[in-house]
Image (cartoon, rainbow, N blue to C red; front, side, top):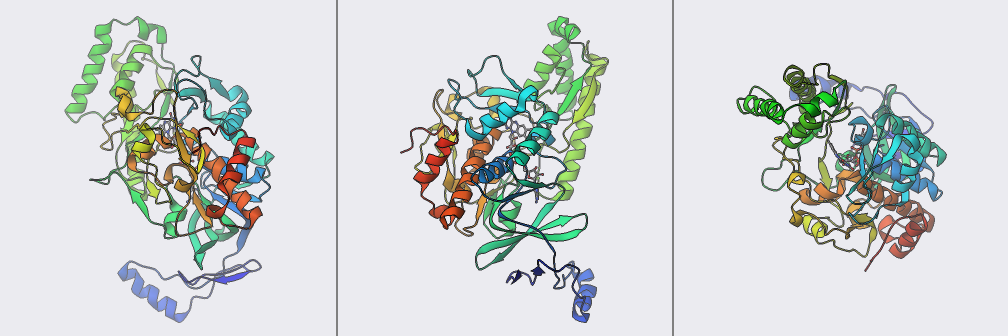
Length: 480
Ligand SMILES: Cc1cc2nc3c(=O)[nH]c(=O)nc-3n(C[C@H](O)[C@H](O)[C@H](O)COP(=O)(O)OP(=O)(O)OC[C@H]3O[C@@H](n4cnc5c(N)ncnc54)[C@H](O)[C@@H]3O)c2cc1C
């Protein structure tokens, strides 16, 4: 296979490998480039690493679900992941809670239910299921292996440690994905490409428009460094007099307000000082900034690791029961809730969420509230106040439409997960992992059926797709 693109002059061939010649002109341009801040890449041959019907970039919950569900319909699928293990935020940022209930009943089944059942000893159901949205929690270490096995059982070829770096677009379609590997740049060819990178890397570098941040100041939701804590003597913590924990809490506030202590989630801190958590104290350590530029992300990530130790050190010094407390694990990555939101055929917004809007192109249900972690990084979240106007009514849910995953520019590209088409407020609900899995199942199934039918994803008969999703266990009710 040989192809030229109009964007940059890449030539790649399945049979060839090796760098192209550095011409005199290229060398001259690069000598000048050192001064002008650009380097000219010479035309070169890039070896083809793999070829598939569906190429999924990103191995978080959205990507895993997409890959498994496309393969289930018979497509040949490759999943590419930049990190050494699978699960994305779920495992690598230690975000280990799933929500499947509209507060009356479970409304997310399908692939999510399959993963719950495959989770075995690593998956746990909350005792009050299904009375609140949070229904399950899991052990991230175990689930990394479970996800790997689920993909393997479906015949997905999973390649970790490769970063999707550039979409090769020709005649309006993505033809190949360039990936960076330890042995150099390679190409992965496919018929359909799925951007499950969380950051919308693939769609953005293919030229699909996107939004970043909220209206007004362009800030994204606050990030969080999640960590786990052990060797806390919970009995001693719980026996402490209220004035002791209030004193510690007040001291944290005073130091923070004086700029001598990191920001922290106040609700989380109160909970820890009350119960002496011996696992993951949720959402304690916030961070604020743009998660895309690598140097900013490096600084935010390292600062938040330091903040974890500062907070735990204070507890060790001041709170009875914490004397021997140890930080046993931090996220491999800083937890990112929001980055690029790729513009799609439909955009899920806050009104659709709270009004539980139903959609003709529904691929499943979502129900989470508009849960915004303060973009300024104070640790405050709208979840704290549980305001009724920020959530769909209990027992009701909105539809997740296929259109939020498709776009008007590139017909063989779909975007799933937290980079799909939403407003800042819409994302604050649909970013949940269970909702990302719904998108993944809908899009993975759509991709495979579209290939079988010989049409683009947007042209597939949506009733055929919905019938297949129901057959595969997806809860899909009230479709108008
Ligand atoms: C602190 C925190 C707490 C949260 N709490 C909850 C909660 O309680 N329950 C819940 O359900 N959700 C929660 N969320 C939200 C949820 O975790 C995420 O929205 C969801 O996991 C996103 O899934 P995803 O697959 O879209 O993206 P991600 O999980 O981000 O996965 C993207 C994957 O793509 C890979 N990738 C990125 N770029 C490339 C590239 N160029 N090439 C190859 N691979 C690439 C990444 O390494 C990653 O594995 C929380 C999020 C955070 C940060």
